[in-house]
Length: 280
Image 1 (tube, rainbow, N blue to C red):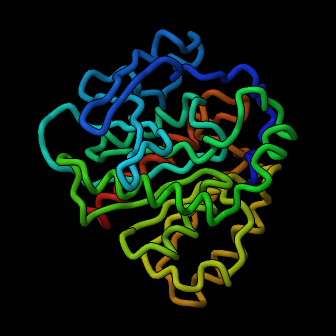
Image 2 (tube, one colour; image 1 turned 60 degrees about the horizontal axis):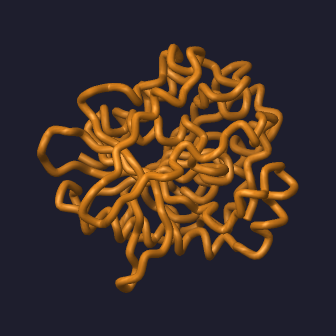
């Protein structure tokens, strides 16, 4: 398992989800706004306090047994909605991940971020400690975790079981493409500054893909994504690539020094129509 190596203070992002409980039938809705700093509360892309959505921690059952947890957001209005899996590049307790789920809910989707880093102990706080703790948790293990989350979504009465997308950041962006390549249940893929991905790993990726990457990214060079874009085009995958001049790694994450409000808003204005087009 690879962990997103952005230079933020990981120790400051401890679990604001701690203490919440949830079951298959109910959500533990959290007032995340109380936990955010004034700076992040004023970020133009932050929507966690919007009264038209509800969100909180959920626990997945697999073969009748509790397995991993995740974070789910959905519109409060009754209805049946298309869903989007959100795959993080590190712990889902960093607020911009629940916020991404909330932003999807605000746009008429059910957003779910599976906790693919559930194997990390609380004591692992530095990038090196996290990578060491997750060394034996392979890409295939992560894809199985995502599969369990997808199964959970399809079981919910408020989810359109036949309409699902996947969105990911950094390592999660790479996993989003690998999952779209592997699963016949996915209809659209949205990677943000994805980890380096070989063409051979996505040779069966036949659903539409929309990639976002900042040209100032110092963690994953944009040239890698441009190479992947060309390779996907050559295999006739329907793919778009949007680059953001000067934007760094994690430019959508308002919890990070690399946050770029203008790039984040522009990217999101492209993501939502793309998902509505392909998920309904």
